[in-house]
Image (cartoon, rainbow, N blue to C red; front, side, top):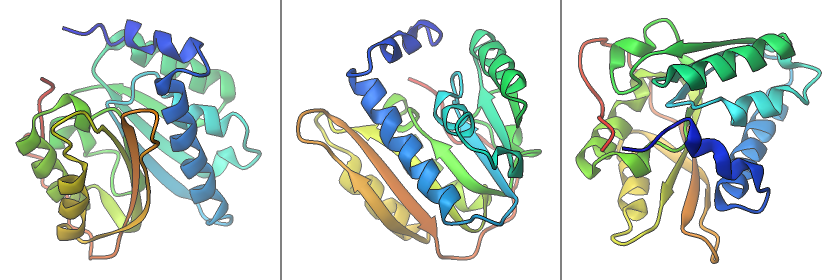
Length: 207
């Protein structure tokens, strides 16, 4: 099994695929915030790790106080790192030690204007990916944005994931698949009506 605390080590290399992927995710968070300059906003991040994507953006924002976020992470060491950084920055970000695969874990965090699923779809089974995408409207506020990532290692599931987002009522606003790496970053906006959260049930389990 992976050690999800040590998993963060490649971030030390700014040219690692993980660092490059994070920069793309961060840029989309920045763009999303810039497009909504006067709004109070809610964010939820699934399997958030140490929250480096969102916290890295908020650290550079003079308007960080208008963002309220919940980071859902299973490894208590990562939760402690994220909560300490949020406290250092003085931002309204709460790191919760919980299983992001359970809908009940989101009860106090949604509906969210931005839903981050970075590093999730590459670590769960294909059926779980489809189930999770179909359930994302339950986590979303009207017009919410979802940012997600997935590897393109064979068999490449990303064409199916993009179709599943469309089936679930999302419009794709960006999709990055750099030629020299296998990661992808997708961005989708909910154009269908959101759905109320029904806490019982499991979305996914890590493989």
